Image (cartoon, rainbow, N blue to C red; front, side, top):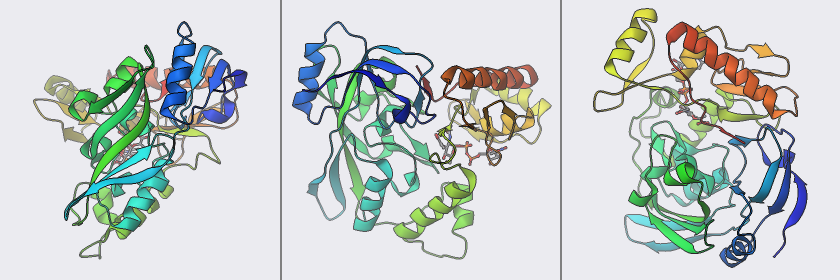
Length: 332
Ligand code: EPU
C-alpha cells in the first residue's frame, strides 16, 4: 500500500491548474483500494479518474484516490452479444478502438471522448445520440465509507443526462465497468452532423462511423494536449414549455430538442455564441474559437481564473436569455 504526501495535482487535471493534495494514492487492485480506504477513515476523500473533466482551485486537504486498475476481458458471448469488463484506469478511446476492431458495436459514437473507463459511468458520457448508460450492465465499486466492495446494476446507477449516483453522492470508487455490446452492426441515423459526415456511404461500417466521428471531433474540439480544456464546460439546459416559448421570442432560430414529458433541451453553445462569447478571451482563459461550449486555458495555473471566466459567461447568458448555465465540469 503506497500513499504519498503533498502531491502536485497539476498533471492530473485537464486544465493543468496547480493544487496540492495532502495525500495521494494510485491503488492497483480492489484489495489495495479497500485497504487504503480503511486505513484513512477520517480523511476527506476525492476520486480522480482521467481528470479530463475536473480541475482544482485550491489545495485538497484529504486523500485523493486515482485508481490504477487495468485490464479488459470478455466475460461471455452469444451469437448476438458480448459482455466485456474493463478496468477503471483503461483509456476510454483505446477501449473504444479495441471494441471497434473486434466488431463489437455500441460505443463507436463515443470515439475520442477524453476519459477513462472508470469515469464513463460517473458522467454518463455521451455524444452523437449515444450515452454510456445504453451499454453499461454493471459497475463495480468500492465504498469510500467502508472500503467494502459493491456492484451496481444499470438501474441502480440512476443514470441521467451527464449524471449518475456516483456523481451525486461521491461515495464510491469505480474499479471496473461491464459493457454489453452487439456483434452485428447496422448504422442508424441519430445525429444530423454524423449522417452528413457519412453522406455517400450507403451502409457505413463500424470503422467508418468511428473515423467519421474522429474527423468531426478533430474539426470542432481543441486538442487538450495543446490547449488544455475539459470538453464541454456547461451542460445543455433543459427548459419547460413556457421557458422554451420565452426563449424563442428572443432567439427565433435557437435549436430546440424534444426531451420528453413537456421538457425541452436547447444548445448551450448557441446561447454562448449569441451572447457574444464565442472565441472570447479574458487574460489566460477563453472560449474556443470553433466551439463556444469549450473553455480553454491559454496558460494560467490558477483554477480560480477559470472559475471567474465561467461566471462571466454565466452572467452574460443569464442577463440576455434568462437561463443559468450549469457547469458539467467538476470544480474542486
Ligand atoms: N453551436 C453554436 N456555436 C458553437 C457550436 C455549436 O451555436 O460554437 C450550436 C449549433 O447550433 C450546433 C449545436 O450548437 O448545431 C450543437 O453543437 P454540437 O453538435 O457540437 O453539440 P453540443 O451540444 O455543443 C454535445 C455534448 C458533447 C458532444 C456533442 C456531440 C453536452 C454538454 N455536450 O455538445 O459532449 O460531443 O454534443 O454529440 O451535452 C462533452 O460532454 O465534453 C462533449 C464534448
